[in-house]
Image (cartoon, rainbow, N blue to C red; front, side, top):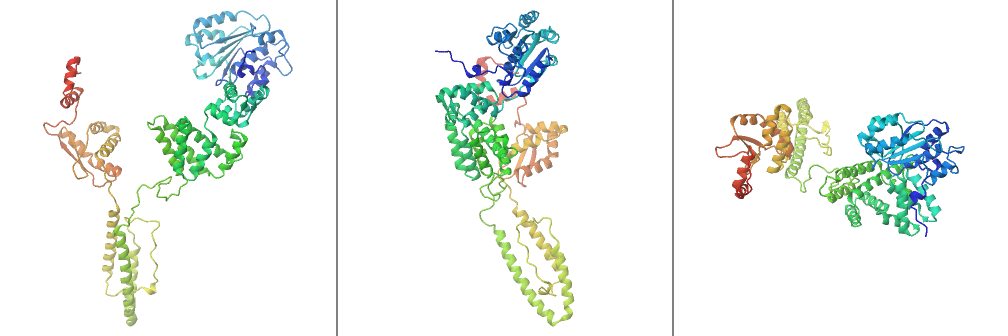
Length: 611
């Protein structure tokens, strides 16, 4: 039985043309070799599994090839290439800096650099994970790296370029390797599957490529794992089952529930996902990615950013047509906020469920009593207010009086034409009074307009004097102000709320009020029984005066934050036996020991001292 070789080693590229996803870098290296413009030091940077060490080996084999091809590749037939392929070449030296990071290891390497190659022109030294070298090792390596022998070429590979000293970076040509795209990974895996005779679905390879996250070595390792699980027939279901990947079907179904405002179904679906062993953070990040894919699917110019299979892409395009951009923007924002707060949340499941509830309410009407995406700050009363009913009755009664007065005045005006001029003057004065609007009267958008009465149909009585009309208008204005004040509702609050906004005000004081801020942080305002008045106890008269100066500001702040206009603050000096606060650790200990005498016994038995 032949020894099994994993796909990551079996299908490792041996030429520049077989390197996947790094065409720009391989073309640059091939042109440098063809034009004989080789640098003495290279730095290959990039994430794991993108081909850094592979390109370094291909580069080392190609520059030592005795008969390279016309396109700049190694021939794989000369003695140098054969020695490299059989791993017996002395022109290539690899050093793992993760385990050989001391000064002695670098000095041993420098001694080997002096020896010229036996076959070929160059000796190539590949130092992998070079960022693991110590600072002393870097400093010992600087001189040789800057001026090596003509036959020596250094290739440094790292996944963390930011950890390398700037003096090293300035001596190297830096090549940044890209993440391998999902499309390139899928094409390469399809070629491997054909060579191995494995039947595979395109959607399954897409999931594998996404799981690999831009690393070809990871993709081939996952491919081998799924091949063993599926026994030579890789399907989409077998991949998501083996890799524990959340199916697209959950996100498509959840999006339909969200658009239909089905909160209960959303929470049940999330519970089903949790039962399958998925993490809530993984679920919410996948949902945000799903909304992002729906957004790019709405436009033909951005649909190329969708890295999924053909059948899944059709479903994205179909569902994106029923999702408007505004909904997707809000949904992505909510999911992103949930992702940022997930680690700090103590009740993680509740955080995700609240996010799902908010998502399901995005498309609800704004005036929905269930809350909607933007619920109103105040709750509408279930029953009509008594004052509104009385106001309607007064309006009906006043209209009847106006009609009666109008008819009576019209008869009088018909019999006596000389008084019509006086009536017109009264009417113009009354119109001027009615046109004046109180600044305290709230303007309502849905308020019904007052019906317009023609001038010929309304005549005022001559018995009513102009100043009486003015007084009537002022009385009506005062009634409107009183009604506005009656509509104000003072909220109920407790001592915990009071203490919270008390400290909030203390923290908002400017820097010159630091002393007062510290005093307020050490105080605990106490509510008096049966009222919205609270008192603050201070130690001396000076502190009392400083607090009394802040009373207007404090009351204004509490009126606004607690939504109660009846809050009042009083300050008094503490009595002789009244302890306001413990000023030191000793005093705190004495106060605690009075409540619990066992603390004194504990101190004596352990021999503790107070400082």
